Amino acid sequence: MKSYALKTGPGDVNRALTSFLKQLLERGVVDAILVPRATRSGTSVVQALVKDPVAMEGALPLAPLAMQNAARQVSSLTVQDPGQKLGVVLRSCETRALVELVKLHQATMDNLLIIGIDCPGTFEPANYKKLVETGNFDPEQWLTRAAMGETAVNDTDVRAACALCRHVTAEHAGIHVGYVGYVGIDPTKELLVQVQDEELAGALAELGLAEYQVHASRDETITRIRAAREEEYRQQAAALAEKTGTLAGTTDLLAACLRCHNCRQACPICFCQECVFAGPLFKHQPGDYLGWAQKKGVIKMPTDTMLFHLTRINHMGLSCVGCGHCQSACPVGIPLTVLFRSAGQKVQDIFGYTPGRDVGEELPLATYQVSELEPR
Amino acid sequence: MLKKSLESFGINKDRVWFRFISASEGKTFAETVNQMVQSLKKLGPNPTWTAWEL
Ligand code: SF4
Ligand code: SF4
Image 1: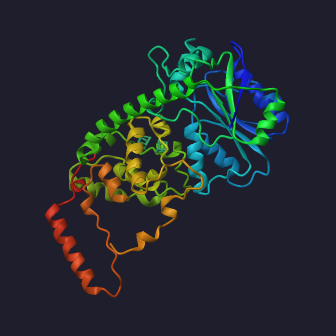
Image 2 (image 1 turned 45 degrees about the vertical axis):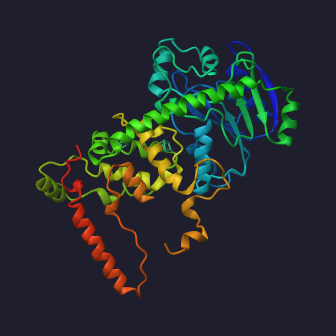
């Protein structure tokens, strides 16, 4: 791996990175780039597919906002060979979800250059909007503080899932852009650009990037952030397990669920076009509802909310990457991240499987070991 | 896998049984079903049957 410094300046961090991406387009390293870009109002950041280098202006690759898991967009772009080399700017939860989608035959990586970014966390879209609107968000001040793991602005912190996430750097990146670990890397002076591949390294050297010695404080900072978040996750998972240990506790937790299916819609892993819950199977006859109400005295409407979540965890738990987009999409604030991440972890542990770890590693249900065929 | 997920949701995993029985093993099949019925009777009615879910 080779490390380079990309020079930035105060007020210039996203712009410096943007012009770097623009050069990748101009030089034909890639033919198009998927990158986060501010909407005209500046209060939101959405995914944009850029073909014209000029249109790269206004991209905000380091903005702490991810309104969806971009792996979904990469799936749309690569489910069939796009015939062009695509660059995609992704954070860890997105590269890991993408790895799972490749295994599920919903995306390909053949013509893909993953430009990974450090991500200390992203804000809930409504909070980001409010921070920008009230003038309380200074992107660079945030970057320098987040580089040390301090992600909160006043009382507003990043999404619940991010505060529990141990992945700061993005896995599987061909080019990786980093800034976490303040000493030695000050994002308002320089960003760290790392490449795996010799050919790409050559292309970067041509762009005039200077080689760079990574300061040990980067790894130290990342390790410190990880440890704190792992601990926080352990605590929250244990507290939740107390509740979900009994049926009554789980019922309480899911009682407000409207079965709007937003969580399924937001989940990067839930790709089925024909979700069993979108079809007629759970649209019962009016008489059925009344019959159940007769039997129990009262039933919750809509019905089958518990079954919906059980079905979902059973279908996608092996591949849950803990991105928390399910929870961000939930209108009633059910703590889905810890519920799905910890329930997912339990089935992953059966197979020693870690979603998103390795694209060459088979999905446990798509393969078998001879020992599994022995009588037990 | 299913049993682990049921546990995560506080549902007794012993309500679900998985057994591999070949079509020629009629006796084993009958015995297993009997065992299952007995075990389920011991567990009593599924609480979701009467739970209000709210
Ligand atoms: S988003 Fe929330 S309310 Fe909607 S189905 Fe999922 S858990 Fe239920
Ligand atoms: S279940 Fe939630 S946390 Fe897990 S991958 Fe889907 S959206 Fe992300």
